[in-house]
Length: 181
Image 1: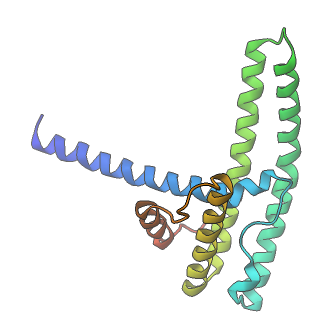
Image 2: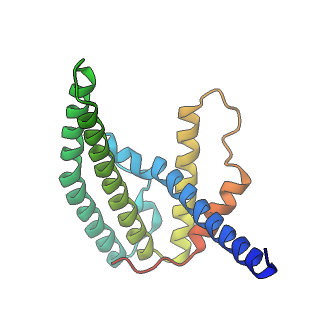
């Protein structure tokens, strides 16, 4: 293999590594931010009033929250229906395996759709904030993640995120987001 090919492959691996790290952060954020949406749309971990929003920022956040409620209201009932259908199939001793897999895949697509909508909405809200407010938001999220970890693993003594995850989170949060409006 030539040196150029090795460099290209190495560059591709580094690029893939960066993408993978971003995905890990998104998954962490979803567990803290998006997954509460599946629990009857409970309020998220972000108390926007603590970010000292201007009147314009507050209006933009409220509009985005309204859009999220609308998206959630459209997608969540379909998820609930698919979950009921899947449960009935799983409880049936003569359920068609192909149908069962199709329902499960449909359910997963709807959940993915909801997660994507929640993440896009969160990113739009974050774009409304100035740099100081974004740092405050980051701290709120870190705190919520730590609380969730403590809830999920109450016997674990350390609630601190691993340094590598903290570094990744910091790099992704500092990365400029494309305008998704």
